[in-house]
Image (cartoon, rainbow, N blue to C red; front, top):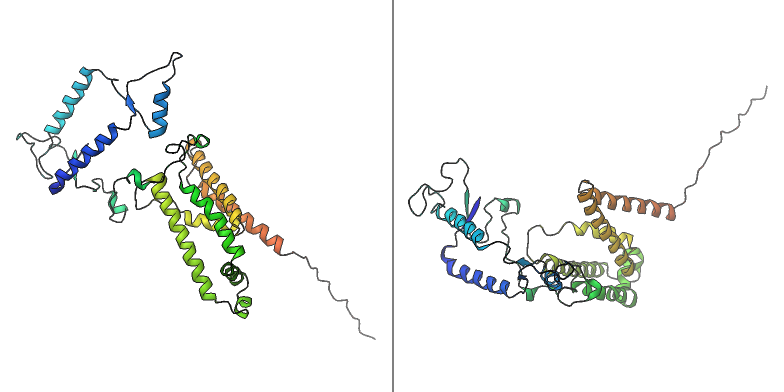
Length: 319
């Protein structure tokens, strides 16, 4: 099935955009013929370009005759395409490709449109183009060449998280506003007696939490995804509740709990692909973790005492 794009009045702009993208792709330095070393391994330059760009284009794999044959077939298909969304003939007046079929072989789409109907599931939103490289967080290995993180997709946003941990600790443990927030959360009546504003503490918590959550979202979109999407979040907000509880509301504990939850996510994906387990297996592990943690909290904070009731002795009436 072929997909045709109707750019309309934006034809020239789109063609310029495609030419610019082609030039930038050719300048990546990740294409060339297959080269091997003396021991039969791929040339290290090919591996380096693959790790830097994420893909490598092998040239001269097919012969000129094979390429010419494929190109001729492609041009023949394009020539037989209908001239419009409802047309039954091609540009030469012949019956268009698939005109005798009950199902269309060509779906027309405008720029940023989805010819397969996915926009209905995305609340009418259309995918947008990938971010420019200047708008993305640099990766620790691909851009900065930090050897310790070779093969990973970690980017500079992880440094923001590392800076946020001591900042949160200083705010909570060394500032009066943080002290007010802790007291208000743990003992509202004591905070009210001390003259602390419960409204101010609540709004401070909401604003700071919202700002950090937004920063985390930017780090995800401008990091590993690199594109605005309607459903980019897999539900990290609900996971954050478990992370905060497991981390005992301490900044360092939250970091360790985040690593644990990340391992659960990765383990769930690995089990799903290798053992064909359902996707919900990771959520089950998270729920069990929270359930047992709450159970331990119950037994640590409260003591169960078994009480036995003894029947009162019977009193005999005097004769």
